[in-house]
Figure 1 (cartoon, rainbow, N blue to C red):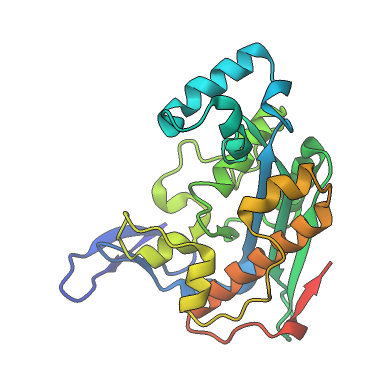
Figure 2 (figure 1 turned 60 degrees about the vertical axis):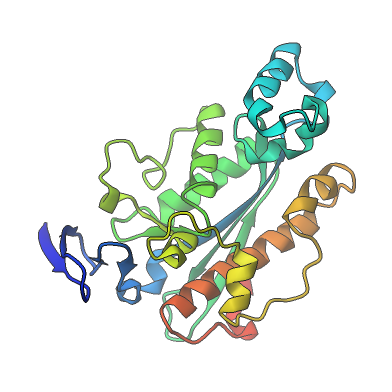
Length: 267
């Protein structure tokens, strides 16, 4: 393993290991993402809901643990029962109902293929793990999501462990150095070192001029669409749109042309 030294204008150089493609670090940002072959990336997004439809369906112990976990967020504004509709954001109290993944086919013509995993959570997690191990387990393969490092990637890993599923290499981070973690986060790339900044995928797509189809639902509606309307297909389409948008954002960050509609294939 060799070493590359990068130095931005007016910034100190940092030495980082060279592991197969150029990744330059300045003091505050990862650059040269255009050196990563697109077909080495797996773009993904997940949709989550509370594990139970209602707070009252939890065991007495789980209800108390939920109350303790969320006390600092609820304060005096909500009871634990009222706040439970937000339980999907915690892997300990939520579950994954859809994982959508997209990748650039290694072909002469540009083609972005999107596939979704649904069904019982243990089954969809197993199917997603099989995708990673069969097609995206190589040393050059990377996972990419928006806010993935703080939500999607750890959420998937935690739910796999809860279900007794051994972690695939791309989600097993123990003992890895920061530059060995095979994850790219488009929100992190947009921060440029400004770690207090949070930019939603919708806002980032807007400012980058990425056209987006009219959204049928948004993230705040997923719980109701799943439990009250029993319409998983609407959620899948929403999740798949977000995967395409993450890929489009990544292309714009590389200053490349956006995907055309006829270059996106749903499989």
